[in-house]
Image (tube, rainbow, N blue to C red; front, side, top):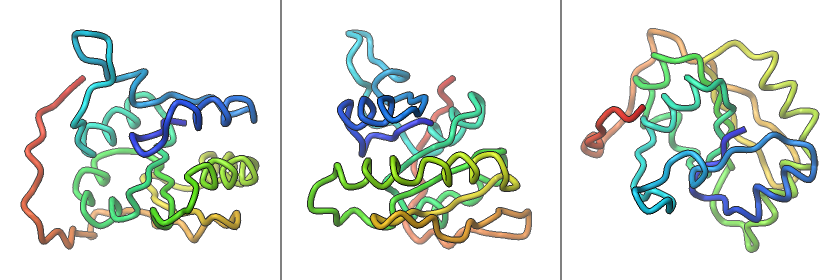
Length: 149
């Protein structure tokens, strides 16, 4: 599992303690001073998780709409929070801990590329499987994104 920038190191520790194998953005993307690299764009994370075979866990539930073209080029599995409105962000970690068997089944069983959201109450919503005929509904300018390997 790869946690995007919305999750902190303490969330990763709690998830590891619950039995997940976890990588964090700050562990994998560092600047020249060995500090967490800032401004990593979603397409870079999508490609990175695809290459490494990681489940991408993100707080960006709109990724399924804004990065359709990038996701279609991969075999990535993405799991997003349904919203960013949790009173305490630890609630998302609690939900992932509760959902552990379902998360593992989702990652193993669903055709890829796929995207699903999960709720604070421990539900994984019906996954969206990406096909070639899907297109983006992007209205904002495309992110300038250079390839980072």
